[in-house]
Image (cartoon, rainbow, N blue to C red):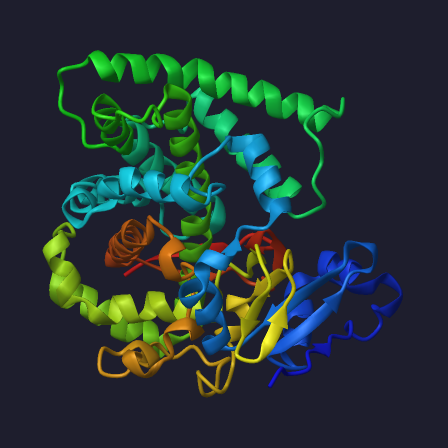
Length: 444
């Protein structure tokens, strides 16, 4: 028996602007409003048709896993992403996506990820060595700089933080975040942002093309992602991995990696500072396992509370606010019918805050992710890296990096919120901090 899909209303005071206006004004509040109305809703969008909001782990599992072949990234997102990055792992579907995923996956196998650990430790130690007791640090800015250095080193074998190409890619990603949060803009329109995008792409190509050619000729061993792709290109008989395709992939991985990681670290440091009992227990674990020596990958298994704290931070303040898919055919989901081309919104923000799956959901409680308890959480109720076949390819890399970053920072310092600071988030493609995050460095 087919079920009736309820039609969503807009938040109070937003009716005249409609759903699109409510989304643009405050996406997080809008999603929370939808979650209060039901787990499967139709969102009327006027001449654009309808979208659908899904907020149940069982239904999300249908979309992201069990019937994943019937869904793709929405056309509007793919169109915008292709204008920036070309065809790549993020924008592709079907056989092309499978081929690209299989080619790139070896770069993120456990053994290769472990090889990046020293880089992660050294970059974090270099950052904190510049800090002074009593200094006020803008944490998002510091974490962006840290993750930018680590990500470019892991991807390209070079630190591009002060390089023209690195700064061009940062600006490129900023423009992408702005563009993808709105309606698609054709690349041929003669407007300043399109001119800037084309200029930035040219800057990236001028740097990456010689680097690819040089790396291909080099007999020196490199452990970065670029080398993995060049090695795969050498044995590729399909013509899939052209130099352009390699550029597309490393730029896409860069965009996907450094910014989300930086925001997650900032949120986690904020939450730790607001919960003294969590901070005390975490510092005790760090002191007991590490003392004053550098972090080693073998320490990860000895630091379960560090992982619990990070997972709980990603639950309460997920940087990936919403995931979207578009049906490529008519789909029946547990009695609900989705018409072909329907766009579905899945919100980790609201799933992670559902009292049905997380009692007292607004409490910061790392114990939810104790190894004896976390298996009781429905798999598709917790989606910090999305889920199903298209789960983030770099999730293990990100988890290891963030644990190393946090342990190395807290080994020497505590961080306290600067007086008068008000924590506030906003949405632009991801969840971000509206007023930065000024924190005072305190020697332990």
